[in-house]
Length: 279
Image 1: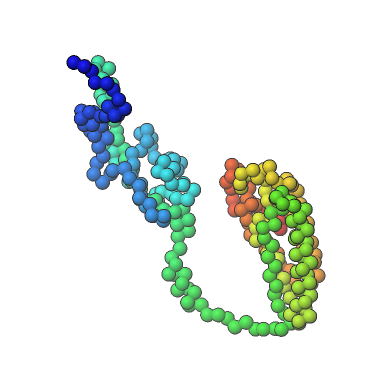
Image 2: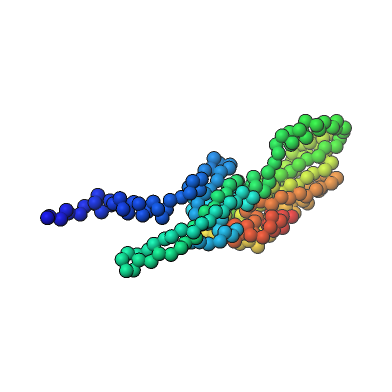
């Protein structure tokens, strides 16, 4: 009898006996079939626990990645975790080398939520109700006294693109000159700024790495030099503005470029930030 020549189609075939073995070993209990469902805000995961490992907090990140989601954006709702286990006979090898043993099969089932939802969930209807309850307070007008808010943002001193830090400093100082003239014009209109709020909105420094590719090769000032230049620019603003008002208030918030980062991620706390340190 002539032996049939092997081709790709034949090589990929699985006979009925093999199919039965595969089905027996990998058949999943009803309601525990591996699956993922995600609609952009909520969902669930059902799967085997890999390598018979016990579930622990950092393992969830691996499982979320394995399902194609980002563990920085989504998290497992710990209150929804279900685990089911049972013993199954598993055979390996053939003939005399065939070995049969009992294997504990473990499945997990859990809901997935957005990280900000799990940590900072807001009842929007309650917020709207509070807004409706509040009444606008009548402001007593004094034509001679006004407050002025000056926002400084995204200087990113140290960024080497274009004309670099030198060009940034020149534009920032030109803005201060324009601001000074604006305040003097207000005074001519009898709208004297009593209090000026100088508000740092973040990203005054560029930082040296961890925010985007090639950043370390594009900055023209190191971290210490960046902070030194920003502090001197802020002092120029303070000296100029304080001479034009009765009270000067400094306010600052942290920006992402001011974060203390390691491998591209902030790793200490929100207030460990160069945008606050310069103030």
